[in-house]
Length: 323
Image 1 (tube, one colour):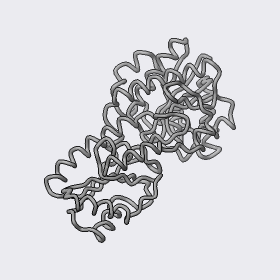
Image 2 (cartoon, helix red, strand yellow):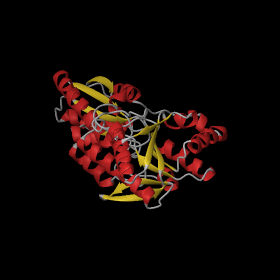
Image 3 (cartoon, rainbow, N blue to C red):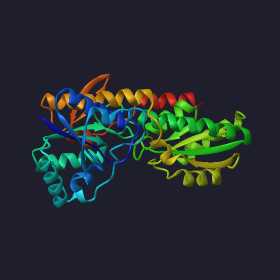
Image 4 (cartoon, rainbow, N blue to C red):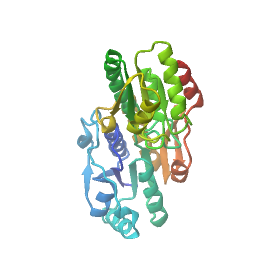
């Protein structure tokens, strides 16, 4: 194998650049030529490729976002789009691809590899941490740190004004960011998709805090929880319990940006490095993950269909510490 391509796809995540750097430098060590595909599957269809040398990925380890840019591609969902992508890879003599992204990225790769005989290896790049086959995904730790920093500042104003803040964080249909943010920031509660906490349960908990003369509270809301968004939940709670001056903060895309943490830099480097090692060893159509501190290769079919569950002990601990 002498020519491979690397690309980032879907939502950006801090640490993607570190993964690209690791791919390019390890591939160069193995005497491979590496091509970077700009804008993910869109660039693959359009033929937007560039040769990457070791020096091209210098000084990007610490940068957020992705130097290769990213996009979501409707065209790649069609047979015609995938055919155009295949022709691009053939024209550049690409023998394998390393895809850095999340569930949608690996779903596209899985379909593509069923139609065309070009092996793919995935690197889990998503702040949501919702992919099966890895304990951590690229960008998750940075996103949690960003959210905790924001909540720390919100606590200052909540304490000063006897306020109840509902802080909405990202995570789609997974509560990893919300749960870890709640624990790390000392929030009163976390509303996450994986639990059945109702508005009534939350109100009773807040009333208990008020009886203990708790002058402020912060509730973390995962965007995919079952009770609605932060604004809707705040309105419902206020109708039932108006002891606090209620406010809503949506952290939003701040969680996607910024320089990756040390943990994310090391994780991204390990996963990118071992994606190349996987190709060298003959692995294909798998995702590179980290499980119990060890590198593991999980088939795309499992990574995108199996559910990754929260640690129930962590959920229980969060509830007890918030009392």
